[in-house]
Image (tube, rainbow, N blue to C red):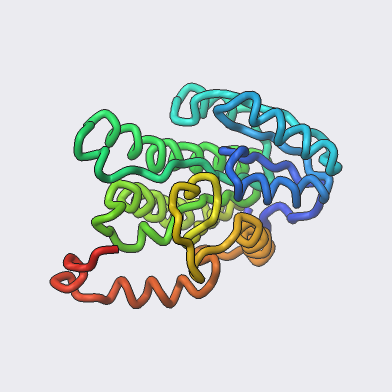
Length: 252
């Protein structure tokens, strides 16, 4: 099956959401619930996941199943993906790494790279194969503009997201003739619980709902790489072309 022959994105969809309790994921889930999708919600916190599931049922989801486990555990990933038959899959889990803490703890550094890159890549690949078994579909990975160029203030997070973006690029080419589309989402600053500790939020910040709406539109249009909001494409183009001798002196 060619990419143009991928399964049509018509409701009710079969949707798998990894990291379903994240703010962006919840906003997307509300949309799919209104579309009477069949949802499989995956997360680490059972109580939080059940609250998201209950809300999705109230909003009209055709069915809601929950899977609770360690999102970085390979056995858990394989178990969930073996029984999944998605038309759409969204990988939305992660954490905002503390670069200073990573200098003090090699164990923390390993965990952050594993969670933000290794586990995300495993979910993307296994869910892509699940889509292929189901006859085609779209796998969406939320990466970050931070992966476009490493910064001193978040070098661990940026490195993990750079790895995820590169992995998705390669997998997108690999799956292009197999009816599965891989989409990479590169958000900028999102005002969410993960960034609640940041006090000064300015004009570049946006809401989880805006990011989710952009993801929904991009799935419909079968975009490959999408910056959200779109102005981040220009911002990152400029940042990527700043000479290294200047860039390494910048404090941001």
